Length: 476
Ligand SMILES: Cc1ncc(COP(=O)(O)O)c(C=O)c1O
Image (cartoon, rainbow, N blue to C red; front, side, top):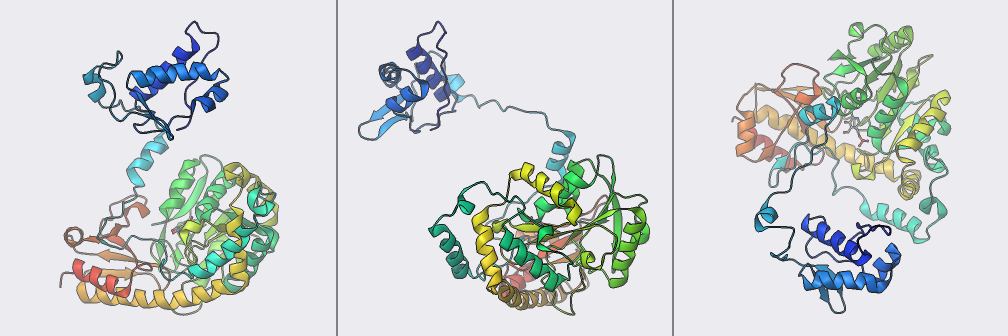
């Protein structure tokens, strides 16, 4: 139990009485839970800078009145049954539910409660809203070995405040090689900033790239995690439709300060932005003087054709901030992502990162660097690409079979989820009845009702679970 009482030496009330009342109030209000252990008389006397006998006097009185119980050899604990004869509490008062304190939320805070829900996992349900990769398939043995290796002899890099807020240098180098090779990103290691997942990358962009009231163009439908973050910093969101080539450039607003896109695998529709659309977008951003945020969250999983080069790699005379993550190719609990920013912006991003959370934990960064450098990441991605490709096929096949005519699948053969419109009002009810957890895509849309659009995350489900789940929601 942490110490949460205080005394006032100059008060008229004797110190032992103040200690007694401090504990009594805490116990009666429920702040000190039944069964909780108190500090020893010696510890408390030292902390409060009073004599031990003063503390003992207060404890003895609380024990005598039935608030505390001393167990020889173990310590002093809050009694599970409190005394009824307490002068401060009647039986009715003890039964009264605790008052709920209400702090007024900002308009933004209240809005989040309305439109940024997160469904709890329903036990026993086949869950199509699990966003992570497959947990069982990750090479835990190898990962554990790297982590242990660096924790065995704890270095100052692992223990101390990091000297380099921008990330562990050798990891920044590996990331720079990885994205240059696989995403045709044009960068040096000095442009890489390691962050806690790409969600933090988006947050830092929002802090640094626009003023309150500035126009930020976003895909509609789009990634709610980005939209709500930009709103938190006062962006005036400008929804822009998406077609089969990606964001529709002719519908971009004039004078957008920032344009946020997910070109490799548009979230949520799954469309890959065509090359001519990429070039058009870059030209438009250049004309408007806008910064592009390229969120490349799951580009590693592409099941047919070769991936198009990143916008960042194609850009000339347009600032593009590239956001990547290890949440999909490793696991989301790792919380490591990265930003690749133009040289001129590095200093500002580093300072904003320091203010946000100082730095990203270093032990995992060191282990990750070794994991990548020894070729495990590439191997793992290759294996998962095959596995998820198969799961995606099973999903599409099952939708065709059990929801024929009702289900329309959008997007390309890529990523870890499918965006599906289901023209069957009873599907939600069948899902609930047959224990299938679906994920509505409603909160990806800025305006309008889209209750017939769903996201099916398939990477974490076995082929059997996918087949079974779709059969259960199917109409045949
Ligand atoms: C489009 C998009 N961007 C960013 C993220 C954030 O990922 P993380 O913070 O885990 O790196 C996600 C997570 O699913 C996503 O779908």
